[in-house]
Image (spheres, rainbow, N blue to C red):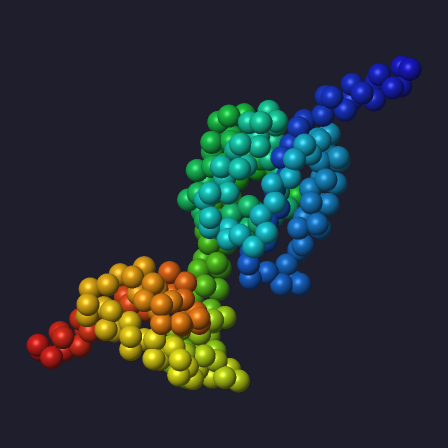
Length: 243
């Protein structure tokens, strides 16, 4: 009986913590899985007299997204947690401004910040605060470089008429990885040009296409973007003629 009461007391006295795990959309097998991150956090919490009361999990979400912090703050408030634990700082954020702002808010609220492998992140210590900021800056730099390299590679493929996206632009299709005109959609593009001349919007254009029996790609966003490109191209051509 004494042991049971003592065990219950020890469990209740543990610091409640929120565990945070994340991986981005571009993650591969080389990135530590969400399950492994959670396991490492659980081990760290147990070894330091903590109890994980909730995991905030973001799968396929960018580390630059600041909307994630609302969930983190909400979970801490909901459980009256005393600490936030994450596997690695780059899993928590790749946005140095958002990172420091939110960690400062947590610190001012009396919430401890812990990183598995590094221990407590003490922003009251100028040296540790500098180290956190520098790591955050490099994490953001790495994210930006990956983004730029990916963009450059896709633009190179686009210029060569190779596949650079999942869905071909309206009016075209991918044939063995190369961009080719789609006869049916090219015909629709010509009709959209007439609708632009008539001053119709995308909703009116879709209505007319349905009445004519067209059953291909026809979402509101697809038609809207196609008509917008037609307008922009004509405006560009007009400026070229004037000059």
